[in-house]
Amino acid sequence: MSPESLRRKAKAGQIPAAKPGKQWVFLEEDLVDWLRAQYPQRRQARQVTVGGNNPWHFTSEARPGGYVSRPHRESEYAALLGLKTERKHRSITTA
Image (cartoon, rainbow, N blue to C red; front, side, top):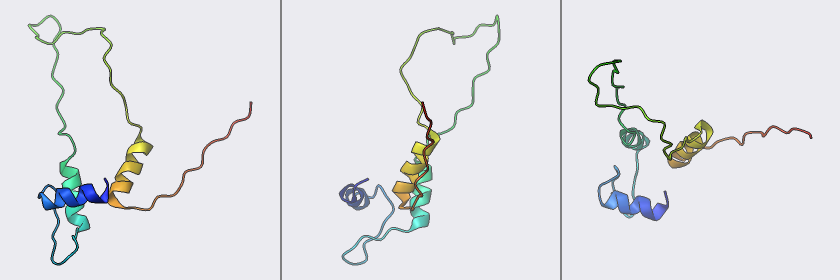
């Protein structure tokens, strides 16, 4: 998030912050709590019974979507929290 976006969100009360003087102050604990509250709610899977009256139908339809790899998500979180991360070594293969 850019510094300007962060300031706008703090001013609007969307992110926990205080401005005791000329600068905004952010407490790490408050930011971590706020960030965790942004996670999507976990949903419990619905039980499927074979041969029952089930409104859920299976299909072979392809749907767009994707998976964000774990290292990419970790680097995003580290960037949001301002954490320093080490550069990971890439594997090198020969032809």
